[in-house]
Image (tube, rainbow, N blue to C red; front, side):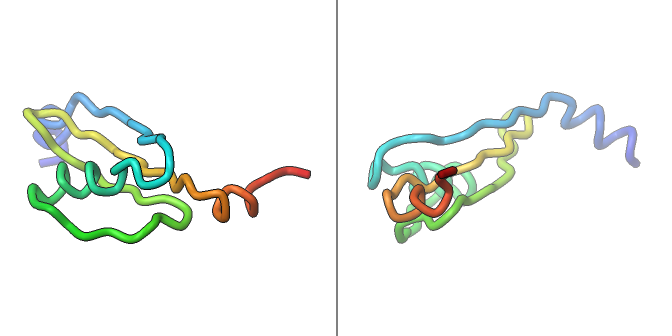
Length: 76
């Protein structure tokens, strides 16, 4: 069973969605994941979802873009 899974999802990709505030990063992520519109709120931190499309697995990371979120991540 494990060998069948690894052959089936052999292609695996990691993608990061970056963009300006309110650019639609979370909306695009949830559209790909659930196939329908999902009302979202500003992302604090990040969202991570795995999406499978045409035999490939995509790990999508949606990184929050607001100034308030970036301030607590600064070094110095």
